[in-house]
Length: 131
Image 1 (cartoon, helix red, strand yellow):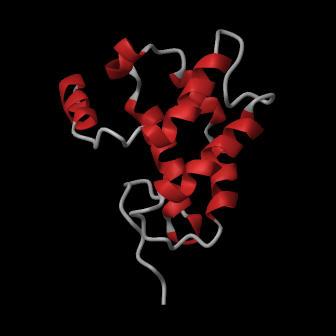
Image 2 (cartoon, helix red, strand yellow):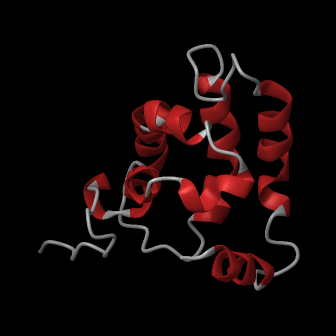
Image 3 (cartoon, one colour):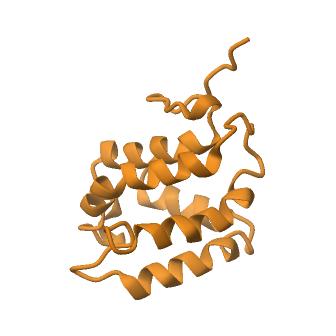
């Protein structure tokens, strides 16, 4: 996705969409610098706590097949901490330069929160529910 397409998609969200995430973003900005990350050992628990408060809203339009979404979120936050630190090396102006595989790893890992049995999909498609 190019920068213009990303910008258009962001602008197309309902204007109140980001209010649910504001408290996380403001905290992130206050914590992070060259030495500190919201997913470092000192802050990862607080990151999970803040994200878990918005999880019900995040799941509003999801399939609801993960019976332990909070447990999965906690695991996923830990699983992406290394990749997140790599992505943090880029500024928002350099977003197009971030290797897609890093962004995909974060996307698919966090996507486990909504998937059946918390399984990740390499292709991003929804897993079919087993009978």
